[in-house]
Image (cartoon, rainbow, N blue to C red; front, side):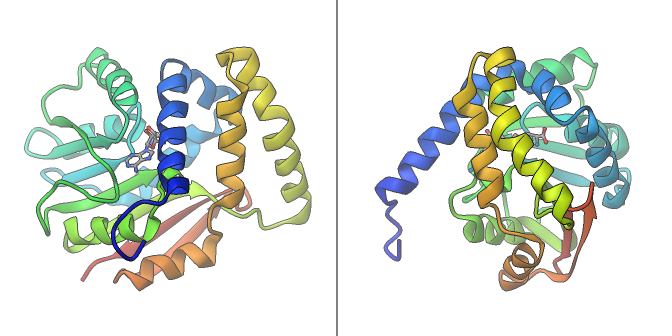
Length: 243
Ligand code: SAM
């Protein structure tokens, strides 16, 4: 609201999102592979390729969950760099930390529990911020984007990897069928939790499309904002700069 209070609906959404990720944390990686037929790995690979990371840089993997992107960044920035995996949910952070430690990635990663809407980092700090499949779960997306803008260095960039609007009608129908009929059943079967996967499908449907997200990024100050559709717009990678 204008007064900074949260409405009942907003608070409910936050609790719902928290419950969903507490409940799926242990099975999150397995479900990701199953639900996307492993394609999420390619989407993430593409994100890394667009990130232009160099040794010594400071990177924030926001809503980083179980740390797939963090793991890749940690190797790229090297000992002199720093990667912060930030997530609002301690169950997801815990699973992420364990996974990355088991991979031997310990030296340049920090774990921070934080809400994307109000980042606890200094101004002009990061060379790169990524938010992968996270923005759609955030209640106040404009506020979150503004917070990311503030924490980026001048010359820094933001990459938003997120479900978007399929660009072709056949894909769009297939995708609706898949997300509303198949996903909740898979969730029930594998994670014993169809409600969480129902939420997932709904949150994907509600998320702003390519042009809307681009405009949202521009309105908080990002420049040279472009996006790249992946898998025919099922997912899009948006990029914007702070100058
Ligand atoms: N980035 C990881 C990936 O791509 O595999 C995890 C994505 S997972 C679908 C979404 C994550 O967003 C969850 O870990 C959830 O806890 C986190 N999240 C939801 N709302 C958030 C918020 N307001 N601030 C920070 N993280 C949030």
